[in-house]
Length: 406
Image 1: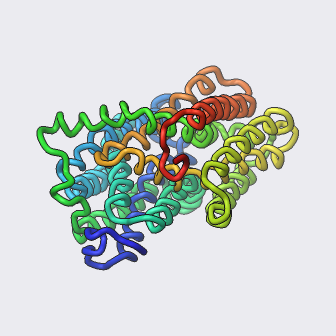
Image 2 (image 1 turned 120 degrees about the vertical axis):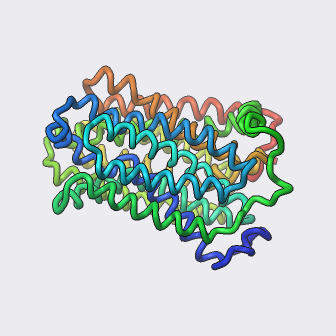
């Protein structure tokens, strides 16, 4: 793989860097919902309400965004390694706090701390990729790490359910603490990837101002919204309501639901291989247009026939997930090429948009309840409409988009 000078200076070379980045992304993503299968039983253990138990998930998403917004830009000033060391140490401490949580309020507090650490680590992960790899090598590593962000939230509850067969829900946080500890050791070995001359100067406030620079970059924000609209907007709604759709709407058993849920995670990986094949023959401009239209087909199909059987719903949702796994690697590469400098801030903005807008989009459907399948289909079509409109406008504009538009 082609590396930058700082990438070549890493102690154990490319295999270490790729493994470290995969580890960082994996345990951060697994932190969101690995213990989700145990949520119903936790209400009895803590003698509390479902609302408070669900707050351990909802507040995690909200506070992870805070971590992205604060720690990501800080890495542009202090360097990546200090944020990685601080984030992994804080994560391990918070995960152990979750293991020994004595009340629902203690669990909520430790989950908030865990989320802030995760936000900084997720933003730093993407920034390190940009610092370390060049050209096609960066695209390949982004393809691997971003695929985990698509597959991880789906695979995590399946693994969590397996743990529950043998242990309590606390075992999930033991596993997460162990992964965090491994990442902390790797952070100690990691050599700083951001050269001193490339760091932002001035106070902490000036570092955070990097977010403002990114937000004022019209090309970055429009292309980001295009990508979020047709890949991420409905994703958290699916994660939150899929069990209700498969079990309540279609009448499947929890075990059958886990098969459908897990299969979608495994098969979504095929999108990566499909992208590798297609990208060698087809321009990214045409690929993006085709994938946006593909999401429209998935949403329309789900709305029209998805309610007829779990297999038809599964097929429509799998198509959507495969498209997401195809888009994320190259879209992250394009976005980081659009905004040169302030890589930590740009990484934070990318992750905040992906997570934050998806979380906001699911709230109306969750609060109103009712037919989650129809709500999911409509949200997919809303995202498709937003993306297609912005994409057409971007193509007709004079703005230059690296790799997409000269």
